[in-house]
Length: 111
Length: 115
Image (cartoon, rainbow over all chains, first blue to last red; front, side, top):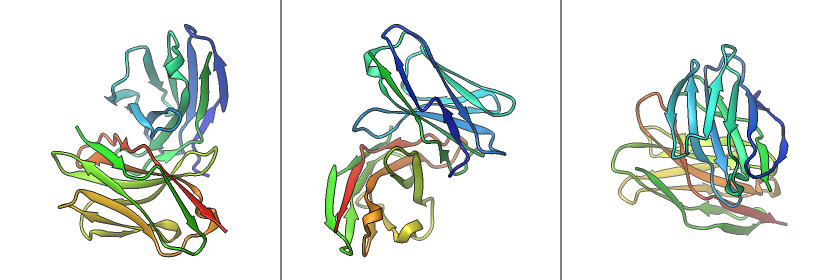
């Protein structure tokens, strides 16, 4: 049990819709990272937030956006969903530069 | 940019046998190296990491890995596996230094331990 919780656990959306995924960080952690894990692939870095500011971004289009709140919880928003967005989305919290603690993920299916 | 290649997508072994999961990386700068395990329907758990110092790194659950700079490898080993070790294993790298802990993962190796 890492203390990182994600909601919802599963989600089904239609192409073109928008989705918001949520992450509650482990107590005391000031950094949250989001990863996308497609079926049969390793996780891919989407972005990281540190003290409510984006602190690095992977090779994902602008329709992937995020927020980190003062209590260090976080949201991942994806607009104009595409079929290829179907994946497990993982959130990880940490102290900056320290070990990542991953949640169990949100499984997103886009039909 | 850095990349990670996990040479085996699946590794079946018998219980109590030794196992090695292979990982090679590519980077033009110094990197940190990691192994993560993912059990079904769970997130990733850190097994071990190499940041600097001794090239032989010991992790949780009896796993160890050896960093070989000349061969750009970071293979994971366990002398005797258990049924409970059945899981997906991911090798990952990040650039050393800095505050951005961005990880680049390999595609994973499914370890299946059979009785």
